[in-house]
Length: 175
Image (tube, rainbow, N blue to C red; front, side, top):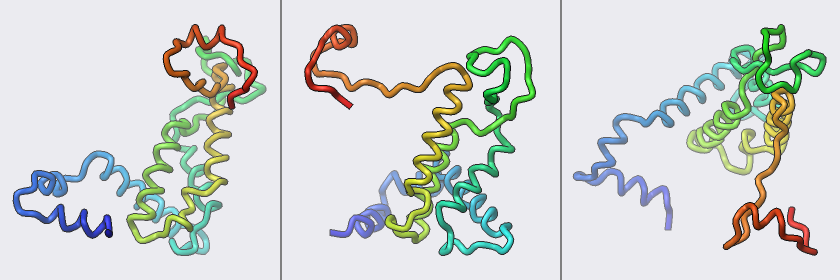
């Protein structure tokens, strides 16, 4: 059964209330289209211009670094006297960058847009390991710069509270 075909047929039914919603794109859909157009423009402005079919994870990384110049998140450098302080008492000259959460959401939208615009999931440059590594490094770097080291959340054990888990010893380590 073809899921896309069923979806397309289902959305064309006459009295379907979702048809009215499709006429006005959601905030997410609007943002996704805007992000997709911005990325396309970025590729066209490369010297030489890059066709979408030739796009790879390096182009995506260049795009993410390009976006940093429009960021609003202060990221203290290691030499800064405020490095590692969650709330610095004074301004400094450290650069503004895109926040990790914004980049993560952007990649999610572009990943979806790539496939919606005919790209195959196997060749999706937004889904590559290099992008995941870059996002993880940005996340860790920004957390350290704010003095809030990133820690993975522990998986909850059914029926136990967080306090119970921390006092429980187990011979089997969890990762």
